[in-house]
Every structure is written in C-alpha cells, then in structure tokens.
Amino acid sequence: MIGRKLISPGGTETGLSNNEFNLLHALCQNMNVPMSRQELIDFSRVSGDEIFDRSIDVLVYRLRQKIEPDPAVPVALKTVRNVGYVLCGEQVPGAAGRN
Image 1 (tube, helix red, strand yellow):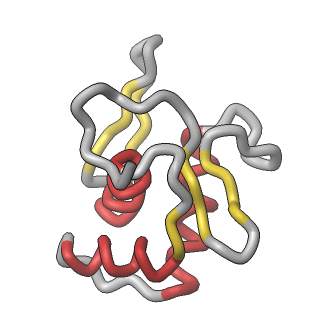
Image 2 (spheres, helix red, strand yellow; image 1 turned 30 degrees about the vertical axis):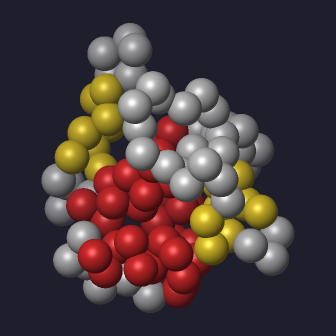
C-alpha cells in the first residue's frame, strides 16, 4: 500500500509505503549520522509500525530502488559496516537531528 509520495525536482512522483516513509524520515532527521538498525526499529515503533531487524534491510533495499540513480552503487543511502545505515547529503536548515 502506497501512503506517501516523493516528488523529484523534475516533478516525477514515486510512491512510498508508510514504513518506507518513516524510515526515510528517521534518516533525514539524522542526515549524515549513521543510525543502527535498533535505532531505526525504535523510531518506527514510535511511529506506530511493527518493524523487525530484517525488515530494515528490506526497506533500505526498496528505498534505494526508488531514490538512488544506481541502487547497486548507493551514493545517498549508504551502509555503514557493523553500524547500520546513513543518509548522505545536505542537511535541510531547521531539520532536527542528532548533531
């Protein structure tokens, strides 16, 4: 079920499930700060979703398919070995994070 949409600068719309959106939201709030799977699971539970450790990997895979130019070589949503994941890019002014 698609709950949200991403709109590219060119106007292309990409649907996101609620779980994909919540994961992206957590990563955006912590731009350039690696987040562990447990932190992402905890964030999702606060949002009312029931997410499990392996679900995070599946959601990251699906997000990469939607936001990366080449999902096989991610430049925005990267894996941090033995830590979790990080969304790399410019931080939006006024966005809350753990800086």
